[in-house]
Image 1 (cartoon, rainbow, N blue to C red):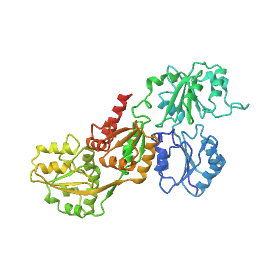
Image 2: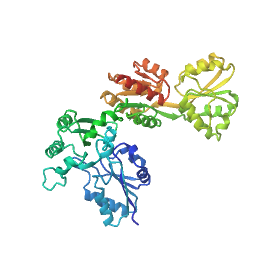
Image 3: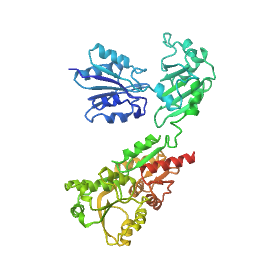
Image 4: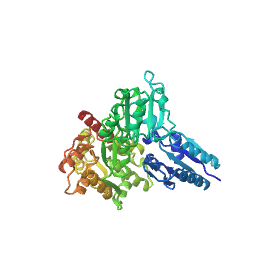
Length: 504
C-alpha cells in the first residue's frame, strides 16, 4: 500500500510561521525531503527515526534534479512511508509544487497539499511593507525574478505588468535586478517608484535596503545584499518607516551567547529569538547529579528533624525532587516544613511540583534572603539547603549568624561543557558575538578558565543575571554592562533590551 506524500510549505524562514497542519505532518513523517531555504529547526520536530534527505537548489548548485526528486517521492511512497516534501514558502508559489503534484497524480500516489506562508508576502510584512493598502495599492503580482530576460519566449508581459499592477514582488530576482529595473522603466514605470530589497526575510539577520528604480541597483551593491532576497516595487514601500516593527527592536540581529546549563539553554534561546536576537547556544556548564547521594538520601528519610528547607535554584529543586521520588515519596513529605525559594524561577519550579513557597525574598540573592529572614525567629531552627557543589558560603554564614543550625547538601555538580566552550572561544575570538550572558557564577568561571590567556574582545557586552554573578565577573576582570534588575531569565532579557534601547 502506498504511503501518502505531503507537499508542505515550510514558510519563509521564521519557524513560527509554519502552519499547525504542517507541523502535525512533520511529527508523523517517515521520510523528509527538504529544500535549501527550509529552516533546519523544523527538521528537529520530526521523529529521530525519520530519514532526512536534502534536495536543495541554490545558484549553481543542485543537490538533486527535479526528475530525481520526483522519482524519490514516488519510490518512498511505494515503500509505504509517510513522506513529507518540505518546501520553502508555499509549494504552489514559484516552488514547483504543482509539477510534483502532477507527477504524484500520474503515478497514482496519494498526496495532500499543505499551503505555507509565502515569502512574497511575509518578507515585505516583516520589513513593514504591506503588499496592498487601501489608499496606495489594490493589486499585487508575484513574479519569478530569475527567468532569463533575454530569451524571446519569456512569459512575463512587461508592457502590461510594469504599469498594470500596483505592487510588484520579485522572488529570486537579485541576479537580474539591473535587467528587471531596466524593463520596468522601459515599459513606463516611473523612475522615482519606491523599491525595497529584503534579504533573509523573517529571520534574525533580515536586512532591508530602500531606494527607487533610479538608485536601487547601486544601493544593493553598496550594502552587499545577497540572495535570498525579495524585491518589492511600488508606493507601499513608503510605509516602511511608519509601520516598521521587526528589525527595529533593541535586540534585533544581536548575536547573544547563551551560557547556561545545556538542558536549560533552549528556553532562554527561544525567549531571545522572540525579541529578535540571534541566540548562540554554547552552554558553559553541564549539570550532573551526584553519584554518591547517601547524604541526600539520609536527609530525605529524616526530614522531620528540620524546620526549614530552602531552595536556591531550579536545578536544586529538580535534583531534590528526583531524589524524593526515588525514595518513593512526594511533596507530602514536606508538609511540616517551612519552604523558602530564593527567587521567582525557583518558586515556579516548586509550584510545578505542587509546592507554594512560604518565603521568598524581595531581592533574589543570598543577601536578600538573609535580610528577609530577619523578620523570622529562626534561632535554634534547623535548615536544609540542597544546592550545587560549588555554592557560595554567604547564605550559610548568614543563617548561622542568626543562630540557625544549617545542613548544606550538594545535590548536583556543575562542570565545564568542554566541547561547547571550545566553540564559544572560537566565536568570541573571531568577533562573532555581540553579547555574553552569564546566568550563574559557574558559567563565568568556566568560560574564563576555557579562554585561558585570551581576552574577551573589546566591544563585547557582558550581561549578568544578578549581582552575585556580576561580582564573580568583576573578580574575573570583566566589566558587566548589564545586571538584571529582576534576577531571572525574563529580567535579564528585559534589562538587555533596555540597555540597547538607551544605546540606540
